[in-house]
Image (cartoon, rainbow, N blue to C red):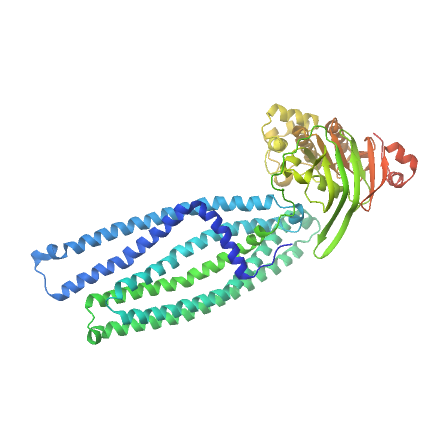
Length: 596
């Protein structure tokens, strides 16, 4: 279950993850900040300062035509140097910002992919795939919003305030004090309202993620939607989520507009003050014309910069709101994690032992016990069928062997090695898994077959396809092994997909094989072809076959009957039939069953 965060904690954790990737490119980040400081200080404040010196010199008295360059030459040279350096700083800022965003986007994408791919199946079972994709995309985009928000409104504001203090305090200290007080009020109001709006942004982002999840769910199940004529119902569900997005965005908009109006009033007050000082500054305080020009230019510039703070805070609000969903995911503990210094599993024979297994799963606050003190020994090379009523624990047992979930008690051993102490990837590379629903990537048939052995040659791929009874239909396709299978393999029939998956398992050549309802959804002809392929696949391997169709397991070396997480019968088919127990009852109910 995801951790619950308040807005401040979520923001802090988001900044933590962003800093982890930013510090890998610290040189770029520092160069970006320094170049921003350089071009703002030089172009926005260096130019007006030199112009104020020129104005004061002109006010001091006329300059002869032949003395213009002699008198004003240093000022002209200073302006030229300031603009050259300022423009160079501006272009350096563009480069470093762009380069930083490209580099960090790569790191963030990798971080999110690793977090999602290494999470347990329980984690993924409780979430929409579309929502996770949406959260990943927003998390990456939010970094760019954040870094640009810091770089454009906030760094220029700091530079502006510092420049005003340094350049105007020696000339008009009273004015600087009054201006700083007004700017502090402005910044305080903006920050207070920013805190208010932050929570509204998280709510808006959450509504967007739910909308994305609903859309992904409907599209993924479009066949069911159409065949049951439920387009209107799905549209109604989508409309509910869509209206929630509108409502959340509207609340965020109104709060942002209110903040903008209040800060605009403060900006008007600031400009009124500078107008009074400029109008009476010379008469009251003897302020020179050049200094008056500086006062107006600097105040107008800093007020504009503070106006941009509103936009900057709005962007930060949106960025933290968009990033919050993935931040929670990244903080989610891994239910199945490798121990420190996990060893690489080596399987020489393939013996499997379940010793005193205790396992329960939770759904919300409800806890369901599946195994309590479960024991089972499978010798190396033995072909074992797992049968029983739905909910008996058959598929759960295979998932525990693959460490898609972790047991709470006991041990699972492969060749005497505790799988909880080995690296998960090394374990799964020793087990070929063929599920009921054949899962294919939106790639070529050749890539799908070679997924477990990407270095396989085309001849090896072809041979695996032949052994899986898949070569004939593949060669009839226009592009053959280069045929794109479509998302989840939708361009192939169920039997064809299953044979491609079996070819994948054959090519992987793992010492242990797990078949989970591998023929339950097939027609008779497809089942015959698949079962022929499965017989070849099981040869010489420790095999665990989960099946409701008992014809799939009748010819195996041994059949284990499970009920309520316990072994109630154990033996070959003929022996279990003679015993007249639960297996015999199940067998008699399946009309048309046959012994291979």
